[in-house]
Image (cartoon, rainbow, N blue to C red; front, top):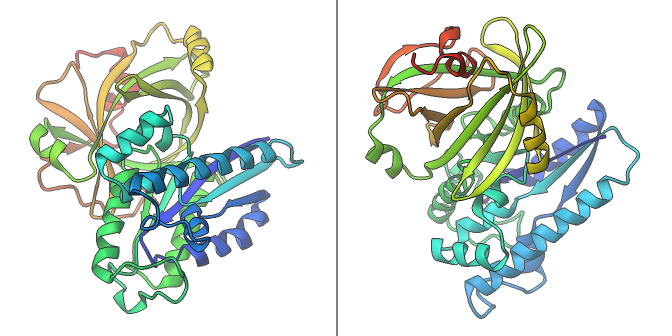
Length: 364
C-alpha cells in the first residue's frame, strides 16, 4: 500500500472547489483511492466559530490547527485499513495556511503550545499545490458567491495569496498554478502537476541547473518568503545507472528525512522516486553509505520568483560560486532567473556539477 498526502491551497477565489472535483473525477481512473480532508476554516466559520468572535486571533487559530491535525490523523488511520494499493489524501488547505493569518509571534507561540515546529508542520505533506487567486490576473472572476466564509476584497485577496505562498515556501515540492491561461487550462495544468508528482505514468523530474556567482546574502535573506534549510546528503551503494541518496533537512534542531532514487533518461528528464523516512529508518540506511563518496553538507535557500520555485545551494567548500536549480513542469518551460543572481553558465548536462560528483571530489 502507498499512501500519499498532498495539499491543495491558494488565495481566495482561486478555483479550489472546482479543482477538487476535477481530482475526484480523474485520479480514480489512474487507480487511486482519493480521500478528501475538508477545509477546516470553512467548517469552523460556517458553524459560528470565527476569528473575530473568539477572545483573540491566537485562540481561534489554536482551535483551527488542532482540528486540522486531528482530521489528518483520522484520515491517515482510516486509509491504512482500506483495501487499496494507492491512496491519495487530498487536504483542502493544510497546517501552514494558518500562518498566513497570524503574526510571527502568534505562530511561534502556537508551535510551542502544540510541541511542534514550522518544519514539522510544513513537511508532513508530500506535495503542495497552490492555485493563485483570481484577484491576481483574473479580477473579473473574483466573487463571493461560492464561499460564504469569504470576506476579503480584491486587494486583500492578492496580499493574502502572497502570504500563503510565503508560508509554504521551503517545502521541497511546492508548485504554483497561476492565471496566465483560461480557467479550464489552469485546472488541466494542476492535474498535470499532480500526475507528474505521483509518477503517472512514471515519476519524472525535469529540472535545469545553473552555476552562479556566490549570491548577495543580504538580498537572498531579504526576499519575501525566502527559506533557509540545512541539508546533509549521503549517497548509498546502488546498481550501475542508479543513484540512491538519503538526506536530513531542517533547521534549529527540527529535521525531516527522505530517501530518493534516481535513474537518468534523455534530455532534462530523469525518473525520481522519493519517500519520507523516520529518523530510525534514516539512521539504519546510513549503514549502506557508499564508501567512495563523502556526505554532502549544504545550506539551501528556497524562494519564489515569477511563479517558479528556485533552490540555491551554498557549499562549505565554495566561497565564490553556488548552484541554482529550478524544477519544471516540462522540458520546454521557460526559466526566468532573478536578476540579482549572476549566472556563470548552465550546467544541467554537466555531470561534474551533480551532487554525487561533488560528493566524490569536494575540492572541485
